[in-house]
Amino acid sequence: MGGDCLNVGCVPSKGMIRASRAWADLRKATEFGLKIPAGVQYDFGAVMARMRKLRARISRNDSAQRYTSLGVDVYIGNGRFLGFDTVQVEGPSGDRVLTFSKSAICTGARAAVPDVPGLQKAGYLTNESVFSLTQLPPRLGVIGAGPIGCELAQAFARFGSQVYVIETAHGIMPNEDRDAAEIVEQQMLRDGVKLLCCGKDLRVEHVEKGKRLSVDSHDQQHDVIVDEILVAVGRTPNVERIGLEAAGIAYDRNGIRVNARLQSTNPKVFAAGDVCSRYKFTHAADAMAQIVIQNALFPHPLGLGYASVDSLNMPWCTFTEPELAHVGLYEKDARAKGIEIETYTHKLEEVDRAILDGEEEGFARIHVKKGTDKILGATIVASHAGDLISEFSVAMKAGAGAKTIAGTIHPYPTQAEVNKKVINLWRKAHFTQSTKRLLTKMFEWMRR
Image: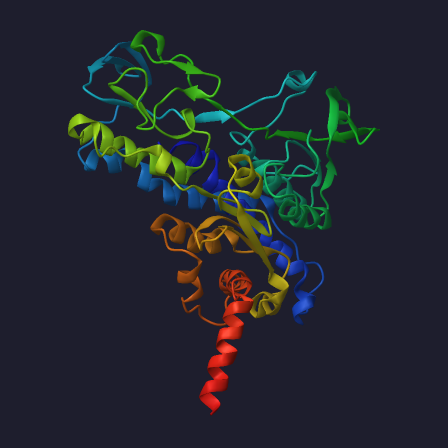
């Protein structure tokens, strides 16, 4: 119960990341005029114990007991479709066959494993096993520089692991704006992460002193020996061994095939979350679950008024330090769609609170549809980017344009001021010469 997010995803990773940030803050305390006694140490085992304790506390929300108390029948076991409207649960107390009028597949996804020579024999960790560690690996190899790889690489490096990140693309987080990802990359390098990007011909070999990773990075051969390997190259939908064929449900390597209503090729069966979505986020699964509930349980006559996944405006955040958050279109997306945009960027080094916090690396960027104040996308790189991006998400969802944010009072001093400051760049750009001439004439008239 609770899926990946609670057990092996968002919850344990953020607990660990918070502890690593506390340790990093301690090490730079002198920048704030604080003197920390020599010999202060951390306890990695205690860090992981704290994470598991908090995970157990949060798990009550997803527990079988809570759902049964709400009137839900919970069957623990392996579920498998037997037919168009029938599912079998193979449980410890015997098998049960259930019939349904509507069903939802929410089996999630698992860590994808690349076909790297020697990897299976040498052994590796994924997000499903890394949080079971009780001792810090002195040397850690991370395959993949996406969100999961970057978050955990930085956290382990801050605790003192020698971390090597291997990525086939250039730099980290290749789907993000290059200058945004570059800010995170530079902080990771300062934290001690060694990045081997543009990696080719990766091979793994179990040796006496650990596990050897051999890779060609920027035309140079690298051989590094690590104690553990973390695989973080994406997600694979869980579609196997659940009898999809028996229920007439189509699927492919990307998961269950669904329409905009999240309905599968079996009209009785819907799907939500990682098993059918390109957005592998907990908040995406939650939004999709609400669409499934509305469409499955509250049908509308003639198909009118159905909730659609196409209407979702999906924000996301990578919880490195600084964080990198985004919502809506990137500039490259707008260009591909033939949409003319205006792009504005404001740096955090010009925001008072960011300066006072010592967190001035980063920026806020918006894309506005040309000739309007409609916000089409936003990117924020900041220590609290995941919180700051929500203002743009709400504005875009509500159809409130840049003028609305420009007219909204933001408390001072907060880092959220960067949102209004980047909007003000748009406002200044639209203060035209004709407007200036008109105001000049008006003021001259008023002086008479």
